Image 1 (cartoon, helix red, strand yellow):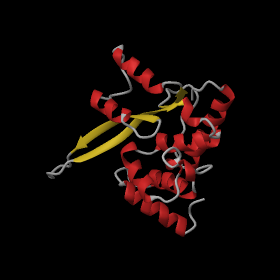
Image 2: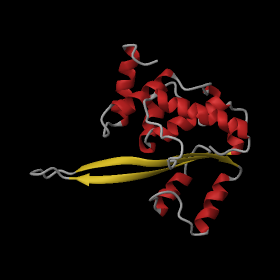
Image 3: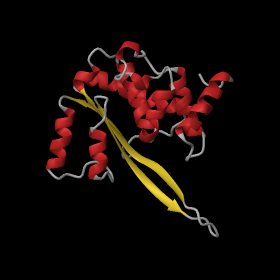
Image 4: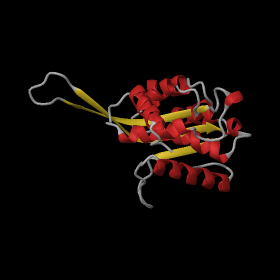
Length: 199
């Protein structure tokens, strides 16, 4: 976590770790190579563009068109995920199985965008963006009536923290098989809420 206000950064970082633990995500021990970054700064887009112009390796295996896609984001937040794709074919079968594992995620926020937000709101939004596959989240944000994912897109109805559905979604995501779709995870999250399994 990198932000000008050190104490706020620590608070956000602690909350993100607590959210990950609540979703049963394994947390690395101190000294391990980090695979999650949250950075809040002024002129974030300009910093990203400058980094690219200098020819520096950006983030993981991202290609230029993938970076361009992220820069077209509607929220004042840029999320870069380093995804490793593994293709396997079972013996005697013609169909291929493609497995996608997220190796690392960077969430870069414009400083002006978090003015007036609490550390809890920033941490909960960042947690969802760090822990859930980016390609699936648009479906979740559209389907879910109450989600921290709308923190920037719908300021009039922004939540003060993750909703119960957000938490159930993360827990379900890490409980189901790796190739479950966003809607399957959302359905499982709704079921766990109905049965009282989610907190």
